[in-house]
Image: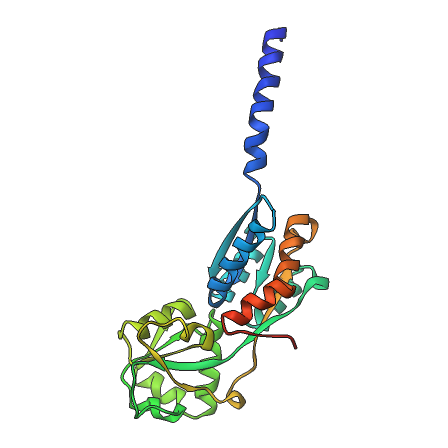
Length: 251
């Protein structure tokens, strides 16, 4: 290779290096109900001086967990229930030393104002009820559990009154637009609705406590920026933001 060719190759590497560095990013997979709070904390992370792009993947916890298990590049995972975090721990996809409960939430029923709907048993009067698909959406799983314990789930399923949504935010959208008579969503989501109101809170004794575990993945545990973002989420700034959006923090 001539000296000219060597010089050109070296120059190309030097020019390409900033582009490669600039392409570095953090990939995080987060339960859909945490979208707004997480977006604000991503902005806070940048304001704190971290010059790295944080790319969020929001969706149902089960879908996100399966994506991670199938090799999707991810540095941090927040689930809307413990089951999917347990799944990734068993598959050795997370760093167990970083796993902890980040925040908690409450399941409510929301829809247009309706004095006739004030408790769980009243929803049998309705024609269409949106819930997240119980197979992948924790909010839907909690709703199914509560309706089953109340003795009304099979009745509603047999009457084809249940409308399955891809995640809790879609269920909220259906209720907010009046496309269904009501929806089971988290309280934090219901507070974002423009038209729908909270008709009642689902009795806590009918479903498992809604907790959101967080953990770094095995890939994220070796990444300094991922650890810094994790510390932001679990620290005082993160707690303040989550509380602002209606989540409860602490054990």
